[in-house]
Image (cartoon, rainbow over all chains, first blue to last red; front, side):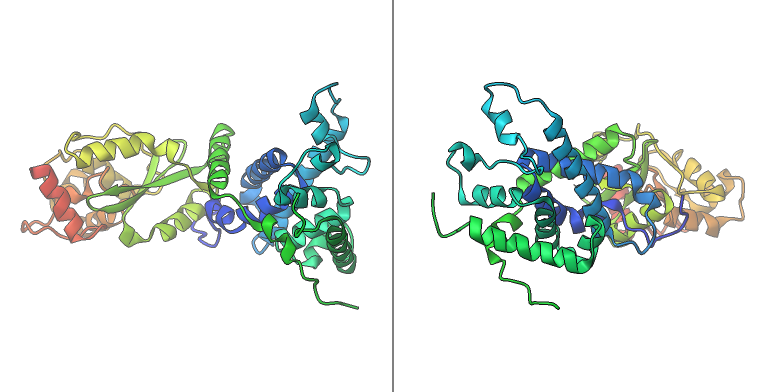
Length: 177
Length: 203
């Protein structure tokens, strides 16, 4: 217990400051239901560990790192899960070989432009997808993105740029379905 | 070599977070934290005739009631430092407290049956708080009388300090302690709030 230490923020304030950004990142890399579960698991794990967080830590990077691990867990679980025959919703969640999710459009299901954009992000290779989500949607600097992906700042920057270029090619917002 | 960031405005639809869905996630976090036993401090606010009160509770019971004048954010920061930083807005744990306070302010209740966590008060201050609970609804006692009851008749100023730093005003009735000359004296929520509570109880 830290007696009379008023430098530590109430966790509620941490959720206020970082919750929306972490949710944006989760929603970019996972299906909506999985994103909500990953967000909940992330903040529950963060709340548990919060009293031990070193003062001066980059809280946003810490949270996104936890969310990243939760997302990886979900991709692995999806890869392991048997696909019940004849149930379309399970098919939609089935990851591709690189841990990507086949977009609903691949099954001929009409989608809203937002959904198509999300599908396009989720269809990116893992590093590009993570770099785009964590830098552009969670506002994490490339240095922190590189750290959590185990690459350099420059490599993270490159992954994000490649991801953005790929999205431009695969997603045309002016085209309506 | 670095290039400038590309135009990524087409990503903006992904930046939208639906407010009601997000509120649902925050509520779910509070529920799951309580379930897992890691919601160390739950809090909510309630509207009352003496202003918006902050209510905070640990698993042991109500730990803090705070007036707006104390600064709710400042109070939560102190709770984070003195009790635990695992603090969440989580109204469920405060349901009984909110109900009993509402009944008190509508004159449907004279005594509180809430579990209290007195960990923020130590030593003589705590002894004083325990004696304050014995001053009945609608009555008052002087600082000197409380000092005598607490076993230290000379500690009149210390009783004043204990009242001023009461972590649970309204519920532990420091508003019922007045000056020996009959004037109302000071109050953590302001003299006006003290007068309002005494008037409410006298009505």
